Length: 78
Image (cartoon, rainbow, N blue to C red):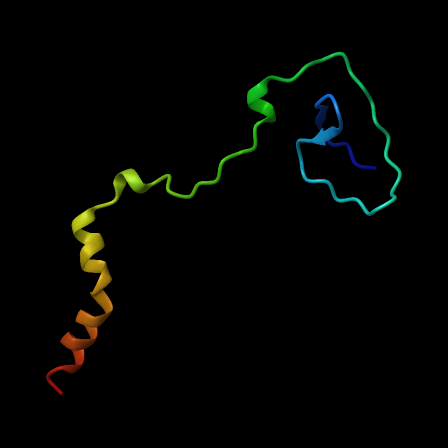
């Protein structure tokens, strides 16, 4: 048996966690007298771009040609 937190949005019951269930699998739904806050309902944002404020634009420009420069430096004198 598995217990999963969720909420009723007025139309359907929405889980707050990933559910591992098969189609037509029986479930037990328990309604409790507590309400959740809106921030608990909103989907979690990904971490994409979270470190962009630390990016060094000068190094980003050098990074575009880093492989090319490295190969040239290593094999140009052979």
